[in-house]
Length: 368
Image (cartoon, rainbow, N blue to C red; front, side):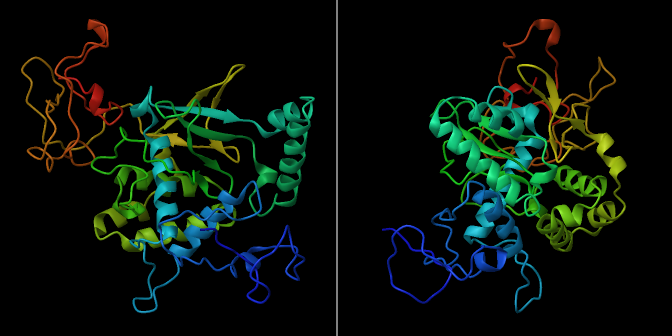
């Protein structure tokens, strides 16, 4: 059944086309008056906003909503199950896929979208529909340049899930207003990507404070590295503050207190190959990063003492199940679904190694 979203409560129950409204031009105050007939139920995504960049605005709203203080505890409820918590969780999933992009080689690819180049191609295509689209996108990007930082936008970087049902399966992208944003479509077909035991885009919403601490440190370091971060990404800044308060481990809080932009040297930049050039993934000209391919200094329950090497190889289970699920892999638990192949047959013999010593190796290519 269709739903009606209106900017004011008075009036008839149905409308044709766009009605005149005293709220024009629309702004964030107008948006906040829209009532969702389903309340904050996470059964359906919110999509009925008249803008090609509505998803970016909705993600901003979602981070803002989950950070509103609870009337009883006076703290943000980061563990809720509303549609806003879903959008925040899905957006963090997108961010974490970028952070672990090396693990998903062959499953996910990064596509660069250059607005200047693409809008020019649409305008000059000779197809009326393309020209109308270019004109609409250009007008929105000019009018919303301050709201969504479009005036500082260089490129958008899209995540394409290559094993999806369609030729192109965009599951998320970088955002000039919230660093990242997710797709509103049903992404249940993304079924072979995991962060430890957590599966992205599912109904088990994961706030940032419950995720890989290396990922948390990365976002806090990124905040230190981007000048004027709080003004460029106010909702994300507020969410990071709420995340800090929610972390129960004081030693981890101390690490975040002492973190600086220098910590980004522990991570690697993200390369993306274009037809004409090779670029680094960025937001507003500031580089984003991925987990380093260098070995991590983490304790693992799978380490064995080698008699032929000074390194500490990991021997990983070749069967899934709960027998090893609670054992520490590197930065997270092994989980019930992970398993390493019995043989490493996809690489040349000279390239095979005996232990997956860092998270840059997916468990599917974990070496034994």
